[in-house]
Length: 110
Image (tube, one colour):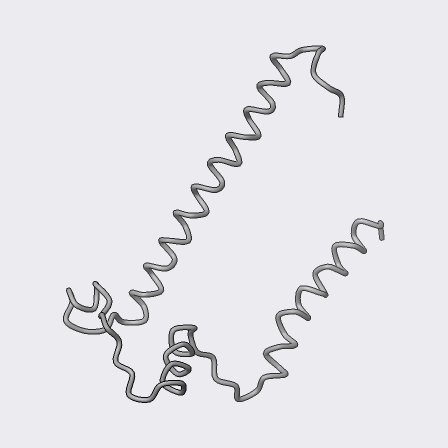
């Protein structure tokens, strides 16, 4: 077994441990969103607090969004963000290659 193979297997094992250990250690734990945790904390600090606005989509639809729709919107937002970041990273890499090519022998060695 080569050194690279051992390194890859070790990193895969560590990744599996990172994913499995918290789930096994937190049996019966409730997983809620940060919105729920924030609302609970505000209610704990100041009882009877009423929010001063409602979300735009909840107002337009006349009720709370289903969880699947919220997940869809979040995934679309994530995809757009990743696309923008990847586009600019690709542009920077290609610009660097193009500048090194234009410089010819004047380009610094790496």
